[in-house]
Amino acid sequence: MKARRCDGEETAVSDQTASMTELYRPLDEAEVGRKHWLTVFTAGMGFFTDAYDLFIIGTVTVLLTPIFHLSTNQISLLNSASLLASVAGALTFGKLMDHLGRKRMYGVEVAILVVGAILTAFAWNFTSLFIFRLVVGYGVGGDYATSAVITSEYANKRSRGRLVGSVFAMQGLGLMAGPAIASIFLGAGVPNGIAWRLMLGLGAVPAASVIYLRRKIRETPRYTLSVKGDVATTASTVAWVTGQQPAVGGNGSSPAGATSPALGNGNGNGVRVRLTSKPFLLRLVGTAGSWFLMDIAFYGNSVSSPLILKLLQPKGTLLDHTLISLGIFAVAAFPGYWLAVFMMDRIGRKRIQWQGFAVMTAAFALIWLLPDGATAVGVFLPLFAISYFFIEFGPNETTFVYPSEIFPTSVRGTGDGISAAAGKFGAFLGALFVPHLLTAVGISGVMGVMAGVSAIGIVLTLVALPEPKGQTLELASAEIAPEPAVAAVSAR
Image (tube, rainbow, N blue to C red; front, top):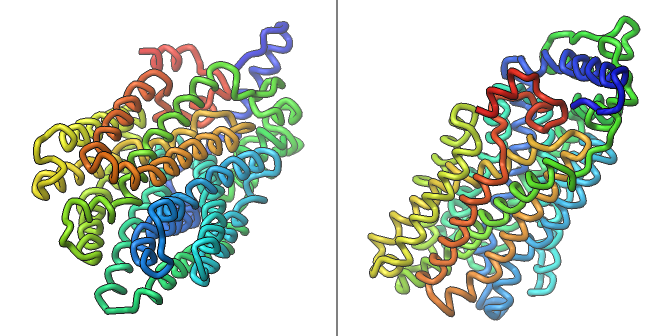
């Protein structure tokens, strides 16, 4: 990215861009190794917990309704409380990551989640549980903002989608763990008054297991160079990850003659990046908007799945409906996550996202329009399962990956945090209003709404988002300009 001021300044910017590229080269070209997978595991266990905590509440509220005498409004608030709080968590931690660094914030958010999960297990009424679920959600939102960015900034260019996607795919295990644990407690005859507390309290265990690892992780090399201008630390971290010593200047303080102050502004040319400038504003609309739409459908259906299945099968027990949910997650959702991980760096994020939205639109529309789509189990369940497969092999994965790639380092945390917050606000709306919509318009009407939401997602993806597949993080984020040959290939 060249500054249009004078030839001397353009040359200096070009030299610094080349220096940055050389310093990152071992990281960009490295094979996926132990340090990469350690980062994925450390981040992924948080997402396992996030999914478990966010989705187990649907079963818990069914158990609590006669115990706490919950109204429909209270059920909706409990189902959506964590999602609303996660909006604040994502915005806060995303911003702080850019100002204080990735390392200083990492582990704090998951510690908040652990405290919240433990407190929920000891709630004594609706109000206390609602407040404690807000604490859980705040930690979850912080995890969304931090984990993707850290994994992306450590990744190589060929496997970045696979690595970041693997972190999010741990959500699939959390999705299955919730119904599985609930089924064990319900099937074993554990009293409802004890079962719901155990279900909520167990959410603290996997998150607590990675607090230490998160606090010990090194600051990402992208942040230490592009924001802090610390070349020596950057070179040390690159060597720690890859086992290769990157090229630095003779005094070890600057890469091939680059000057740290210019690199410290976050785009390598001394001009501070703003998310409201081109092309980042359109990208932000694309990442935040598509995540918002996707989470309306995903969380609206998932958190309220016990209510949906109860309408579909009025005579079925809670255990029956929990096992059906587990079957859908295991057969449809879980494979979808990992197929997306496998294909992310092969066919690209953009294609996976728009085609996922397209199949979601078709599946929801068929449930809505077919005469028996919302009433016959043999029609509804296959279409519902197909929608879940393409949510995962589609926008649920890519909306997590995209914001960690297409914004410059100095504002990457903020861009990711805004995008995640928009998604979680959509999830809040879905979880809050679907119980009311089910009462007002039934399953058919809810699926009609989801079809419309998904259709808008197709358009937004095609219009607003670039394809970062196979590019370095600096090129994908427009932190540096591509060489003419690369730009020509990208344009084609």
